[in-house]
Image (cartoon, rainbow over all chains, first blue to last red; front, side):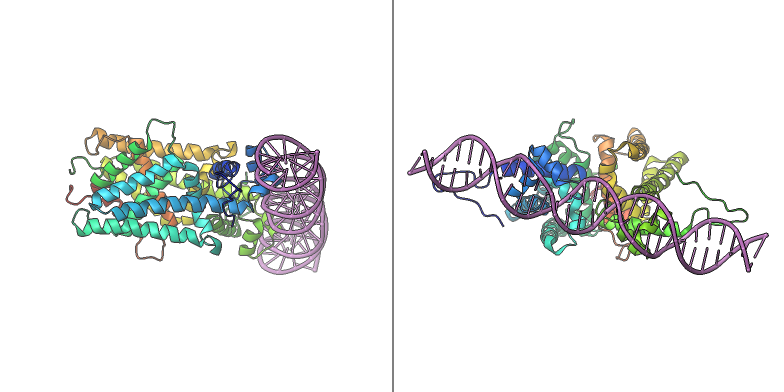
Amino acid sequence: MSAARQPGTGAAPLVSERREEILALAAKIFADKGYASTTVREIADAAGILSGSLYHHFDSKESMLDEIMHGFLDRTVTQYRATVAEGGDPLEMLRALVREAFGSLGENPAALAVMINEFNFLVQFPHFAYLREGAEETERLWVGVIDDGMRAGMFRSDIDPRMIYRFMRDAIWISVRWYRPDGRYRPEEVADFYLELLFDGLVAGSSS
Amino acid sequence: MSAARQPGTGAAPLVSERREEILALAAKIFADKGYASTTVREIADAAGILSGSLYHHFDSKESMLDEIMHGFLDRTVTQYRATVAEGGDPLEMLRALVREAFGSLGENPAALAVMINEFNFLVQFPHFAYLREGAEETERLWVGVIDDGMRAGMFRSDIDPRMIYRFMRDAIWISVRWYRPDGRYRPEEVADFYLELLFDGLVAGSSS
DNA sequence: GACCCGACCAAGCGCGCGCTAGGTTGGCCG
DNA sequence: CGGCCAACCTAGCGCGCGCTTGGTCGGGTC
């Protein structure tokens, strides 16, 4: 839709800073109240402008949501792709993927929350087909790593790897609902706790 | 709010069957589209009546949501309480709790989905304070069992039990988003897969 | 000083929402 | 048969929503 504007001469922000600012505010409110329950007037209030002025920056309320989700999905999928492309020990790769997933908790919790909360509803509309594609590619990447680990005899292979992936994904991503950045744990610590639990299990005296 | 009606003589449905029918339809639509995005006209259409006729059965759209959530919470919390009250081996108790949690997947997936999707938003309103109470009691019950298991040396005790509970809860409950009753697995099977993974871990050749 | 333009304001339109008030119907019961 | 009532219909009210149109303002540029 909106291409990057290049002013006559010299370097300027590719897209307006104000625009990014408003988008971040919108993401926060979408995350807190849900997309449908958020009004454009609330977003405008948070930005200190009138609701109509939003339409100087954005085509519609939906286009704001679109940009938030697209941006988040692009960033994470690119990251997962790079990690898997690097190759290596499946166990270490899975560890890296989990850490990256928890990393988005710290980087952009609002976008992650919006993603989690609205995904199931939005994915049924043709316009948001890219959500399904992104989710499917993510699943392919993760399940591929789990599969490799199973074939290498590193992971137990008596459970459907897709089911394992889903248990992992849910436990990791939904933690955005209870994780507090100002709490006692940093995202990396939570990631390591989760990896400990996932790899070695809850029962005492298990392994490694 | 609405008490059970007792007709003059004889046995009759405590509450109207039609009412329960409409409530189930509403739960399904709330689960699919989200509460805020659902209109009373959609619910009425599904029931084959006009939107105004809904108000013969219910006070408001919110009261329908209220009844769905309250009902679900009451059933599950009661179940957890009974299981914990029975006592026994912490490992077996946790196993039972997990199976019960997955059980609500089969019994009332719509109510569970509504619960998961709307909880975070609704819990901030005073009217829905009972949601927080129910969630807190559930957490107390589960964490108590995990704590007992740790003290008994059955569970690893190097991870905050509350964090373990949250990882479990999220992975279990959110599975309503991908679990399909007509798929290849029954809820009990999924529960057993999850218990296997949780107790013994993903890494091969671990324990028991 | 004239021009330009990004950022925002002022005012309000039309639609779909939750909900309401009063009327109709049909099955049951004495 | 007459009265009753749960279930539903008819018609529409008022509000708040997303969004539009035309205008204002101030900093930057030559």
